[in-house]
Length: 57
View 1 (cartoon, rainbow, N blue to C red):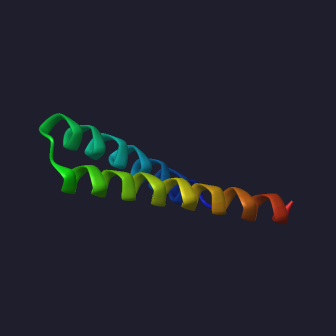
View 2: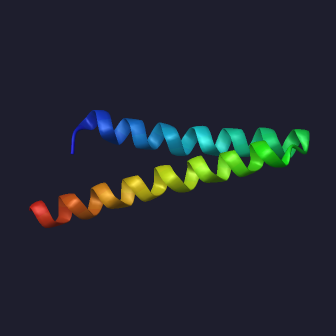
View 3: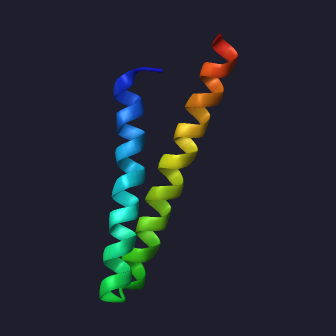
């Protein structure tokens, strides 16, 4: 796994957290849902990469 992929997945999770917070603040359900989706997706990708690295070593 490259450093670029790691950064990409972490920024996706961070973007999700920010979007969810904005959605909460503005009471916008769509933004909250998008934020949660991005956050979960980024975290799952990070977990998958960690599992790949564990089996490579």
